[in-house]
Amino acid sequence: MRKTTKLALAFVALAGAVGTAAYADNNGDGGMRGGAMMRINKAMKDSNGTITFDQFSDAMDSQLKKLITDNGGKLTVEQLAAALEKARFERMAKRIIARYDSKGDGTLTTDDVTGREKKLFAMLDRNDDGKIEKSELPKGGRFGRHRQWDGGGNDGEDMQ
Image 1 (cartoon, rainbow, N blue to C red):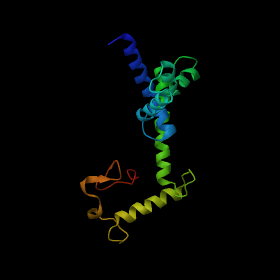
Image 2: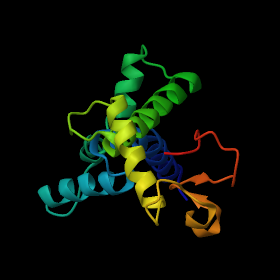
Image 3: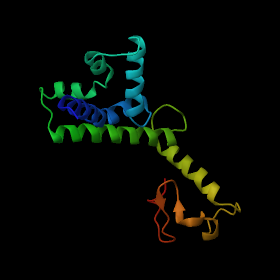
């Protein structure tokens, strides 16, 4: 493989790594691959099936270049990691708010959380006696989407 091809692939991989978090955060699609390909395909369509490096570079997610510019022209591992982590946690926060926000106003209140807990409790209380018995819990030891049910003594911190 030619050196220029290797460098181009390395650039795409690096741009994808940074762009994944930033692009998913901006577009909510959970990843950059599809978004980058959509932008590249659009650039190719606009240019009759071929693109130059400059067109390719413009089509790639500009978040990496923006991060470098915002950090004085150089980006350290720590700065890149902080940007990726921030984008990841912002996506998580948006999902949590969307899941609990009963008014759809983008904010979370204790009433929203309590309302969701009441719905979950009602779903688990299959015989509507106001109590959840072990036999009413989901089979397979799963509780919620990603939480393990410990079968007893749980103070509720694992509940969603």
